[in-house]
Length: 174
Image (cartoon, rainbow, N blue to C red):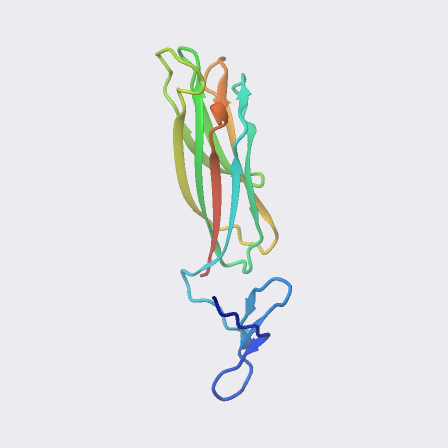
């Protein structure tokens, strides 16, 4: 059987205030403005997309893959990992994707070459991965999202066959 220790506060050896645990969230707060050392992961937020969407446009459009995070310090950075599946299904169809923080364009993730074989959207999935260390410089909530477009006039798919795409946000203490 596992042991459970229920506490509201942990004091140091001198008996002065130490670590306080929030009863509703379980999060710890540090006394005297103490912070985690630089490079520590402060918090993590994950977004997933499992439903297939199609697009027949060369105009960037939201994929539905998003995640939000509220930085605890404006000097902290956000490490973004995005893993996306997508495909074009006809000869010449390709997919391009971009990563955004709110309305800020963080750049192209990838652009596929033209597909030149045969098959269906469920067996032609390509996987793209990107990692970006972003500096949002805010303590307000920010949302990261992936947009996509066709590279030609053909139809492209994200999460074809209901495959899984993810976006992971990690706040990194500075």
